[in-house]
Length: 226
Length: 192
Image (cartoon, helix red, strand yellow):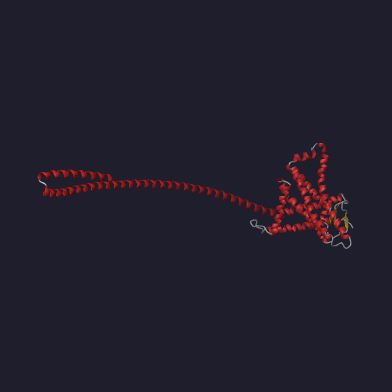
């Protein structure tokens, strides 16, 4: 039983480096396609939505998601970084959908450190961008001169550890769940018990990990801005 | 590149799960690009239209609340104006009532005075009439007594008394009659 990642296509860039199209990439495209279909549907439907009327059904659900997330985001971060709400909204939806796709039997894209690290890295860059934009002197001082300049290397390591910790937390949880479920499936006649296991590892844990990853990213960005 | 890979579960070769080499970091680039593209698409297709609707609704609610505040202020203004008018009307009513009461009192006083004056006049007139009547009665009685006395004396004298006795008796009777008449007249005045 191997948990390595299937490679479907490789584009040779140099003798040592290839650009690989793996099942992570493919499954990411599937996740993107699902999200794009949903977004397009919302876009098309929203043209007929009347803001003067009380929302119902699907409109109500989408408005609740967007508005609820924005309120949650504003509570977790602060108003100075309110413009980043759609970024983090996409992040939580993308990770949640990536985790939930495991229900279909496909490998979740987030069960690949090659996916979780870019996500964590993007959150890290957002954090640095926010810090440098809103309080550049204090932010740099906090890294290089707090409490004294001798601690600068430790502070730098602490900052760089954030994306690594974020990415490995998500990756570890997803791979762990995937391995556990695969092992249970490998046991003969074990085709019923994995259902609650799927409920936990794919749905509950999947959504939970998406929220944890995003909330931590939001807190990092919010802290950097304050 | 064949699209077949979209439908198969396993490829022909595998990439190690956690092999931190240059190959892995190069492989992260398409994943990062995919995520950034998703951010752009979801923001453009989903977030913005929904936010636009929510903003429009928030604006509408804010406008309605502003309108309600303006209406409330107008209503308060109208209420104050109405209450002011009511107070003025109350004041005017009180003034009218006071004026009416005053006029009524004056009218009553005037009527009472007129009635009193008229009653006094009637009383005085009645007193005068009574006095006149009394005088007339007194005169008539006086004359009647004189006549009766004269007749009686004439008869008596004619029967029993000579000329001298007749004159003396006549004088005595006359004096006695006058004394009696004066006493009755004084008694009548006291009664009136």
